[in-house]
Amino acid sequence: MDIIEIKYTEAVQGIKEEWLVNTNNNWYEYVIKLPIKTQIVYLVIVLHNQVFNGGFHQYFVNGYGQFAKETINALIKIGAIKKANLLQLAFAKVNINNNAPEIFRSQLIKKEIKPLFEGDDLYEPLDKLDSEYYLQEDEDIVQLLNRYLLEKNS
Image (cartoon, rainbow, N blue to C red):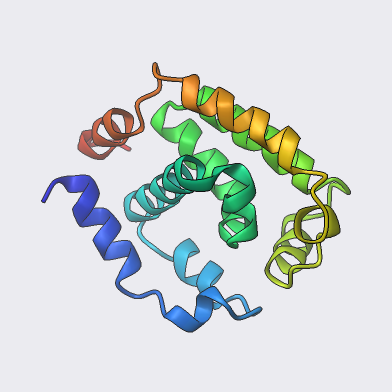
């Protein structure tokens, strides 16, 4: 097992299945309290897997978008600036009213963001961002995470 797998396994071992479908803050609070390197691995790997599996739309619909702000910071911390910018653009499209993070999180997990859950208004704009994400081969997430995890002062 490599260091990324170890950190990811550490991150997910305490997540309870019911948190993923409840509208409380347990999942968010758990992730935010993880040790920073473990948290960064979780946030970055989840984003990467969601985008490659179903795009930014899936990332937000599945509730992972509640961590968008933290994930943007995590991407910047590991040096994935272009991917951080794309997630920022996706977040701005979903959080169209520019709500405070806690209000956005609440609306997202309660599925109250109509353009995301009730219409297809966001499919095309988010799909364009997916395409840009896929093309950014110069920001290899695994390589950047490994480098970050092996740095002593990060």
